[in-house]
Length: 461
Ligand code: ARG
Image (cartoon, rainbow, N blue to C red; front, side, top):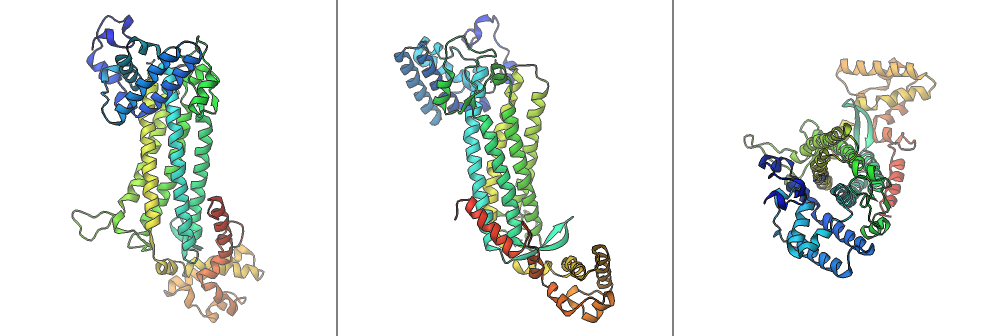
């Protein structure tokens, strides 16, 4: 291709350096936006027709050719050319090849600067919808698992040390809560993505009488971006989306970490189905939770993509700069990564086998000691003193190599005269869990209440 054939070739008298062509192209990745680009082209053509810039016949011819091009892309027949830089110029050049000079009218009143960000917003609206659907699936799967585990008791951990007994349902609901917040964040982000930049031109607006409201309606945008400089210069909506991905990734990663630890032989709290695990090429006994490790590991990318974009944006002079082309790979990568991780997590949660007995035996002994202290508080002892007494019981038991449940009433009375036989009730993890009846606590009745609220919220009741 000679420089004359580039869509911008007019003012050039030298062929583009090969390396520059390779270094500056984006079509190898931004072809992901091809369908959005064609949708936009068609809406733009209709807007040009409404403005009297294209005749009905011209518009029809252009739109038909674009539909053909779309079909070729779908069927993998379209020839993408690196020397045509990006998805936009590839499609426009092919259109012109097919319809002749008329193709040159398509880009009237438009710049790639408002074109590219329009494509991105269209793309992102679709992807946010998909992510929100996957998040709903994950929340529902957590909810189902929670329902099935209302009577499973395990120790909650703080500092990865056994802390207090909880209901397993309460644990799963904690992540459902986190993913609900993530969903809300994506939906809120969607509102800001849902604004049309097209009609902003290169930076200053457009000198043809384009009805931007009409274009917005055609493309299903709720509002227009209100300032042409902001419309073409900013990628804040992508940064915000990448943040939502990063935060969701963080939640997935923490859940993955718990499940990895729980599936270890040391914990033995859960089993993962064979079909979700992989083996070792050298150690025959291994069954590795790779899917969870990768969900945890891929969170690094989600963070990295956010930081990449924020860094790309921070020093840019207003308005469009070619640096902005670097927004796409982080965006596509986060979309792919997050969707994959969500699908993977649903499979894991649906396939978990819970080992109730090992969870239950982890929830006894010292895990119950907070309530022994609180028992004394109910008998009038100040909490700090009760805490101290209970602490001495722990150290006595460690020294004797005994468990809390083995204590006799006489031994207990050596620590405080206020202990009665009814203290033994507190040596049952489920009893201790059910004492936590405050709003949002782990008692059976409170967890059941939250379960039914959650089911209503998910449209399951
Ligand atoms: N491929 C470019 C991008 O992704 C399209 C916009 C190019 N605009 C320009 N004036 N060079 O940002």
